[in-house]
Length: 328
Length: 298
Ligand SMILES: Nc1ncnc2c1ncn2[C@@H]1O[C@H](COP(=O)(O)OP(=O)(O)OP(=O)(O)O)[C@@H](O)[C@H]1O
Ligand SMILES: [Mg+2]
Image (cartoon, rainbow over all chains, first blue to last red; front, side, top):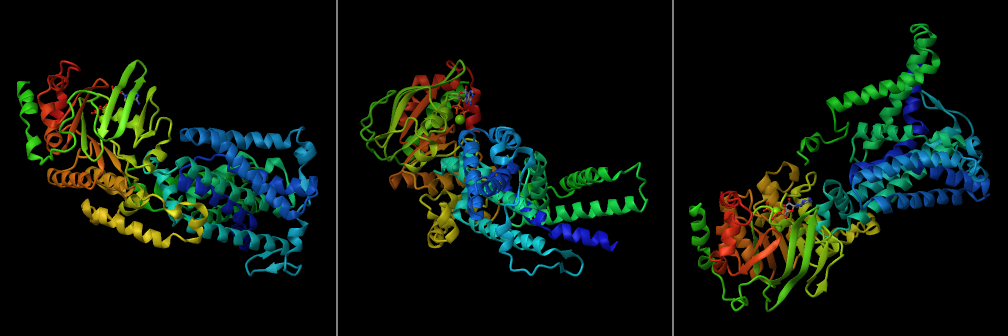
């Protein structure tokens, strides 16, 4: 029992939760505040991760140069995706981003890219300078209910700090005239245009900003495991991020953070619970093999989202009054 | 049917509206007539949807500092004309100038910044912004709309001025009560008012209103008409699409009548009342539907 609880807490506070929160903050800028349908947030994470990994391993650049390359790649990707589609109806960006998410993964794992990305075998050991920066003594930390290794804790501290910074940035932006235009674009592009706002320019800025946050999250994900494999960045990730944004409440500054905490709490709790039940023989192995547990957990998450949509469609932090408005 | 014809003819707001002799006194009342000081000049503007010629304006000038009404039956092409001129749609051919600047090919937001601002027939209130935010959005030249200044909050003092202006306009349009309500929770008429107030935040030199009075109660319509006249007296140019003949005759300095995409008549309100082409357009010999006038007058 204690084990299930400590697993759940570890999952909730762990590096993944922070990293997904960061990527979801980026997605929230796109989807929640600007109304952009980006179904390829994972592509930004991919280029962020490989900017660092390939920069360091393949090209022998310093760690920070790798990070900057990842961010630059995200900016370029946002421009490539946005410039042709953002003048058109919203569906075009959706299609382009879905495609980008999948195509980029195939490109990165393809034979052509192998000299740079090492294909499906991925890249490793590029984040030593990151761990060398850690001020933490090299032993496990007992946080009462659960313990973290020094390396994990260091990634957590950095990731959650970045999440806090990103939230502060979003808060400042959204509560400024810039954010007001962004929300106006979400409500009605034509109205914003009739008031002299360069809608296209704002959508592009939004796409770049959210994409850069995605790239930083992707780099952290690679740092966390000291490895980058193309298949880590599959389309599923984007849909988890949507689940997180919607769960927490779209267009809320803290929505993605709360969403990610809960998402990972549930994921870790259910995984640990089902494994314990399976090990104890409560659930027979024929009914639920250990390999099926992961899939079942995701099914439960889907069910949970369904219930959320029925009972609280605006998400946990969402403004239900806003939701009831007759938005035509 | 003759009843309606009589109403079109007998509406005599023209005198009651308090018109000044004005610069248009000597302009001939015929389609395409030249004005002494035109702010908007349209030439050979055409727009078709499939086989349907929605707009074909050979020449049209709009006098600066006047209220010009566009009238015409449903589907005459008035809104389509607005869309072309304001840059929201691309015409098939033709050009137009605003204060001497050619506008063909310019994006809508740049046209708005140049001082030509339009509203929409189907209201475009920004639903999940409050009434106050809707208005504040309209202010131009806000430094806080640029990315870096937005973060360092150097826009605070400008924001105060913008808010003060927005509150004045809310007050003028009887919307102060709705200040902090979402536009999505406002009534249809209130949204019309909100949209017009928001357009004024842009500081337009010319404002194009597409049926601003539809759905607004009569008492408020009267006060709105007063505001529109006051704006004109301050030097603003106003083009409005309106179906209510009493309103048109009462407020406008000049009337342009569309039918089937073309300007079929132009003139002072008094000229228009007696123009056979206008009566025909409304009563059906051209487009064949007397519902237009009936609807308009209800
Ligand atoms: N986007 C469009 N696609 C196809 N046809 C259109 C489109 N917009 C307008 N039309 C057609 O163009 C013609 C002119 O329409 P428009 O909306 O300009 O009329 P209107 O004069 O504003 O009428 P109303 O008084 O009813 O508002 C109509 O016949 C309409 O069917
Ligand atoms: Mg119309």
